[in-house]
Structure formats: C-alpha cells, structure tokens
Image (cartoon, rainbow, N blue to C red; front, top):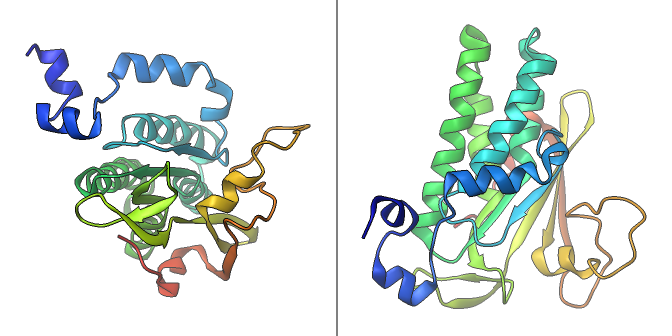
Length: 228
C-alpha cells in the first residue's frame, strides 16, 4: 500500500465494510475552488453527508476563518462573533463514531488555534465551550441515507438525525432552531430563485421543527441537548 493510499484509508476492513476512502487534500482544495465564493462567505452553510474525519469541513472552515480575520481582525469582539458564526455554518454526518469524534476535535482545534492567535488575552473559555457545543450539534453520528442516528456499531436506531440552525438575531443574541434532518431535505425539489439554504425547507411528514432557543452566543451550551 503506497503512502497516498495510506493517507486515504484507515484499514482494508473499513474500506470493505463501509466503503471508507478519504479524499486527498489536493482534490479537496480543487473541489472547494469550484464553489470558491460560497466557501468564503462566512454564513454560507455546508453539509457533508459522509464527512469522515473532516477533510472537506476543515478546508471550508479554514477559508471562512481567513475571511473573518481579514474583515474583522481589528476588533476582537467582532472577530469572535463572526468566528463563532463561521463554525456554526458547517455540518457533517458520519456513520462511524470515531470519525465523528475526530472531526469535532479537528474542527475545534483549527478554530481555537485561529481564535487564540487573533484574540490572545481577550480569549474567552466560555466562547470556546460554546463552539465545542455547536460542533457537537452540527457534526453527528448517523446514516445520511436513512436520516437516522446510529448506535455504537453503526446500526440505525429509531431516533432521527437532528440539526440546529444557528443565527444572530440582534447584537450578541444567537438563535438556535432544531429540525429533524428529514425536514431539511424536504424542500430540495422545490424551484429556487436564489441559493438554497440548508434550512430553507418546507414542512413534511418526515420531519419537523422541534425547538427554539435564544441566548448570548457565548452561552449556547447552557441549553444542553443530546449529542452523540
């Protein structure tokens, strides 16, 4: 097995059982370049339905944070708020729990490195915990084909995948709205006059709006919520 193949696979068993092959960095960058403008829009939402340990998501977050740094680097408060928004706009699903945990850790590590470098003494551990919580809601262990959460063996459960929509509504107040994944897909076949948001979905029998929370963006974690 050559070096490139090793970087793109973890084991022959995982390839055989789950078809797991990671996209190489060069291809990731090339594919992101096809939607370059969107990857550089701070609030543009991306969903990777088989995210692995985050090759695509990490590249998108890197690009978004570079824009945040360029636009808001002179104000640590503006930078912090928009860096949180960038992290909240990225979603992933993977059927293997070790990939999900690795992806969350990788995304937070990338985010925290930038945050620490930019805000230095003004960094807030409360904000760090908020971002960890957001990533726990956005990167989930589930089956993107059946729209169900999975157990530790990768088998479907009866629990639907739930995603949270995050948005700033005024000042430092952030709104979280929870939806089942099925509802988010319900509007995909409708005609679109503009870019479709992940959450621009019509109600359906398969999914529904679940709950809404509003809090300071540094305290979103205080609402809790189950994550796997």
